[in-house]
Image (cartoon, rainbow, N blue to C red):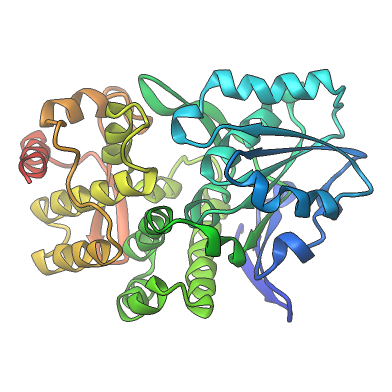
Length: 370
């Protein structure tokens, strides 16, 4: 039986993602970039760090100091979702080839979700698979994209349509990196934190309601708790369903709506977490209409999302027809049938195609009028 478990030391907390031979640890603590033994997860004598123009000045030299006994190359990419493309992926692959990296090399993703997704995909592709390490520096990447092995790039016609399931050697989460994170990025990460409370952990949802002020002030203990419980929830789900054949799909609450928004804006408008926040409100509304949750539950979910300065309505230019056109390309469409993650109640979600099209249209029209 696959599971996730947790161990604690004086320096950090560790969650193990149990996937048999592909199992790996998630280390959570303050100062991990400075003090964690990153080198133990570098399998050979060479490594390639992939980061971006925002993160490199902050943490690249520190990480290089950690790996002084290795031959380390680096790729510094532009920062932004709009650069999560095959063209920019090719910059990583070209560097690997030009610098003669072999199958024992290790790629290290130092950055947010874009860097993690692209580095993981490059690792999955290069010489049919080399090792990689996730060092996520944004809240969204720490609680979501760095864990679970989803790697991908975007396409102009759809988000994350080109990718692979490929697990890292380890995930190293430094809570201190959130001190330099802009408010907007921090709030976007909170959307994914809220998601875990909505889909699988009502007690955590209640904790978030009670501790909103502490999280807004970025209290270290509150952040550590939120990150730990988010990772625990995701690790348990991923351990039970690595390649999203069943329960793992509930992690996509709000994402079908959100990906439509991102694609509509060509990845230059809403941040991923902002788009997901809007999508979760829309999913909650559809859940209410289809009989899953009460209006009070919807109001509580919406209130928590608003508390973290997240949007609850799509961009003004977007109409219901735009959603429908883009949602039919979603990865959760099977045999022409659109499936959505809906709430059965706060703390429980299900993937369902059991909703009337007119209910979905009602939700879309209402959302686009706000």
